[in-house]
Length: 151
Length: 193
Picture 1 (spheres, rainbow over the protein chains, first blue to last red):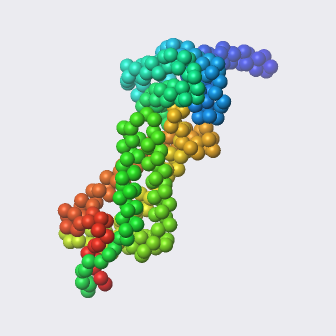
Picture 2 (spheres, rainbow over the protein chains, first blue to last red):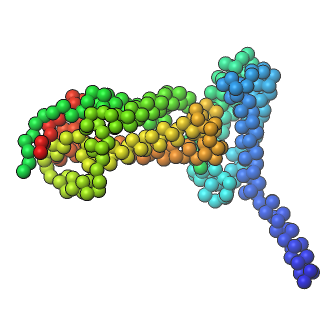
C-alpha cells in the first residue's frame, strides 16, 4: 500500500513540474512581473509629481531610467497564443490584442517613445516629473483603453 | 369626461436649468471620455458638476414645486400600464408633468448617472494620470473593476439618452406634442380634470 502511495507521489512530480513549465503560465507571470516593475517605478514618479513623495532628483532619475530600461524589453513577445483573458486564468489581456497585433505593438512602441529621455527629463523639480508622468500615463491609457480587461 | 386643455406654468426655472445643464455636462463628459485628451481633467470636472446637479435634483424631488416631486410622478405598474394604453394614439398627452412611463425613464437616468459618478470617483485605470479621487479608499480589485463598471455605465447612459431623444421625437411627430418647448419656457398645454 505504502509503495503504491510512494509511486503515485513520485509519478505526480513530473506533472507538477510540467505545470510550472507551462509556457502560457510563464508568459503571463512574466507580463505581470514586468507591469509590477513598471508600477513600482511609475509609483515613485507619480508620487513625486503629486507631492505625496518628496522630490528627490537621484531617485526620480533612477526610477525613470528603470522605466527606460524596461521598455527596451520586447514585451509584446510575451503575449503568446493561448494567454488571453478568454483562454487563461489570471490574464487581463483582451483577445483583441491577437486580432490587432500590429496596433498592439504600436501602442507599446508609444510607451517606448514616451519613456525616451525620461531619466534626464525628470531632473529639475516635481513639475518636470509631472510632465514625464503625463506622457507615460497617456501611453498607459492608450493601450489599456483597448487591450486591457476591466475586471 | 375629458377636461379642457389650457396652458400652465409647469416646469420651474431651477428644474429647467437643471435639465439643460445636466444634458450639457453629461454629453460633455461622455464625449470627453470617449474622444477627449488622455489627461481627463475636464472629464473629471464634468463629473463633479453632474454629481452636484444630481444632489440638487434629489433635494428638489422632495422640496421642489409639485411637478418636480418624486411623489407627484413616480407611480405604480398599474398607472404605467394605463398610460401606455393610450401611447399610440395620435394626439397629445396633455400630461401635467412627467407621465407614469416617463417617470421610469427619469428614475433610470438619475440612478444610472449616480452609479456612473460613483464608479468614476473610485476608478483607477492604472495610467497614473486619471485616477478617481476616492480610488485610494477602496480595494485594488474594486478600483480596477470600477473602470469596467464605468465603461458599462457610459453605454447605458448612451442607450437611455438616445431612448429619451427618440421618445421626444415620437411625441413631436407621432403624437404632435412638443415636449422641448415646455422645458425651455416652462409653459405647457395640459388637460385639467
